[in-house]
Image (tube, rainbow, N blue to C red):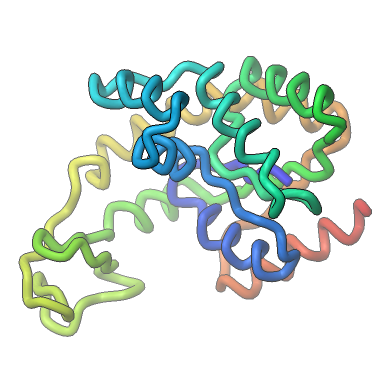
Amino acid sequence: MILMGPPGAGKGTQAKLLEQRFQVPHVSSGDLLRAAVKRKTPLGKQAKRFMDRGELVPDEILLGAIEERLHQDDCANGVILDGFPRTLAQGTALKSMLAKMGLRIDHVLSFNVPREDLVKRMSGRRTCRDCGAMYHIIFDPPLNPGMCNKCNGELYQRDDDQEDTILARLDVHERQTAPLLAAYRECGLLREVDGIGSQDQVLNRILNLVQAHE
């Protein structure tokens, strides 16, 4: 299962719920790379050179990390991919890699959330400078404005959570993923999910879509 959608669409939240429901691991490409770097694996060392320079990690390194992860025992019954693929080239490479492993894609879930809701979700996020705890000024506000509940540290807005940066990120995401979404739609794998509502409401929509296409 592949989860696709713009930043702030709720993919990470739903991935954790789906992981519990289906008892298969949630594999985030970003987490995978950070873990490889921390473990100092050969792939991790390659990725670190690009990450340290603030550059995108090449597709072949990402694919290598995913293939390495899929060979682990806990992926025997399936996996939930989050954050990869994002482009048509990545999707083509992933399909080829999975075919060689005797695996296939069953579902591609695309989370649809209006732009104004995405901006509201991300621009409202605040982070503690001291302990890193996360809050949201609308959905999960701190007890005291501007102060962390856990350590009384100062809360601040990250640069990538400011509105102009969010809009730029959304534009890039749309340009990158549109051809890939079209390809998945054409081959009958795309399941479009309304991402507005409570976590349980969105989860139920996903489960109904998956069940309808089994």
